[in-house]
Image (cartoon, rainbow, N blue to C red; front, side, top):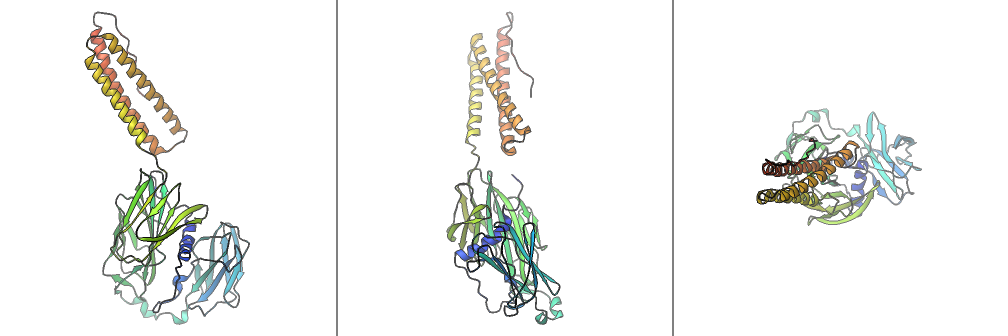
Length: 425
């Protein structure tokens, strides 16, 4: 198995999720009882009402009606840093960015540093985002900080998504979870936030940026209680073997998911299928193409199941056939050694066949070693092939020993038959 890493183009995934919501008509509407709008802070939103490549950053304090004017906003685009002051409506607009560059907007309001998610500068259309500062005049009393946790529920918010990236003979699965607590105080869920990764998962890893409340033990992921108000982000990854070019992922979470979102990197003819995903479309992001699919809400404890298929893989058929042929040849050699009687010519012919097979295997082994030392090819596949070659050579040597013993026995009292055997590798 290869080491689990972040998905390629990870800075584009957050933008991809936003594009997906727009593509399927998902609209974020403020709900009664929401504690504040900070949950919308820093999330890029593609729009068509701005010039191509333009980025508009709005800075507010606490509420949408409380704009922060004359505020310096910094925009990092690749290695470039741009700054603009917000106008009376709290907006700072940037243009002239290089399409495809990784962008992050930041500002500092009353000592509070605000940052956007990383996103990709578009070549068509623009990007709008808000940076929401805390309104200190409406902050909770200091006693709220020591309020004991209460029993309550959390959900996996709309920013939660599942990302799948095929790699050679496997897929890497990323669960990017937005655990949302809508209460103003910490809560302890009735069901602990603990879940197992999918069957067959290997290399389960917490990604950088995950909450310190999260931990991994083998394939078990635990998020400790109490969970604070607002959002707790947990990003965990694993790898699933998929030597057939197809894998079915089944996952259960201990909290309800407000909206199922699955993103799959397209490699070759990759497909995504699930009865839980109502619609899907291809979506470019950075220099890659993804399948973006959206479904409805998923109840706590209900399995999420989908199948990814059609991605390139290394077929095991050739190696299996080669190994089977080697076994057949050895079996024939053993049979021949036992049925040739005392006829030396038959034994010599069998010996020559085994020598030819040995030389072929040695040639393949030398070629494989040269590829490995020069750094060419896949190390995992090379290691498996080397094991097959060594096993076949051991069987050939066994057959040669049997034939050689017969020849030596048949030649006692007469001229000897030379049996050549090179030194072992």
